[in-house]
Length: 227
Image (cartoon, rainbow, N blue to C red; front, side, top):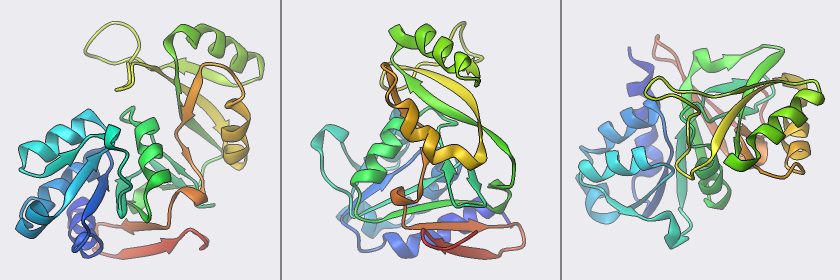
């Protein structure tokens, strides 16, 4: 059984009846949008806010009504996926470079659900953290973080030479950080000029995580639960 499809079908129960729905970015979210496209009531009665250009295009081409982020409308519910969740319940996002807009929608939504495959639950000591940096400050920030003892890489794509540029026109750095210090790291480095946001999602940014495996098992965890 495909965990992505299982998660998408299961998540429908949370979305039905909601008027304003925020939607994240990634392969799991794309599967969710595909499953949602058969829900005619949602197409007719709901408005959607997307965390990336990619998601906005995907929603629009399937006939959903999409609001601009500039509308500043607060979603009733926000649903997104994640790249990693630690045993402490801290999520890492930003594999697709949409971390700033994802965190923006998560923060301003009334209820936040994150869905992912059970294999994304990791018990590792060091994790690469995406950091969005204003382009003019990239070299300064890289130098500063390396002086602080972190390993830093400028994220590059395969479609063009040079760094990946986010939907906001910024550069993405990937920084290796000890798992035990993630939320502390998130707060600390925002004092460095040019750093816009990190891909660290601490527990105050979500209400529920839903995991699924290939055997069809679904597990729900609230922000206050242990993992």
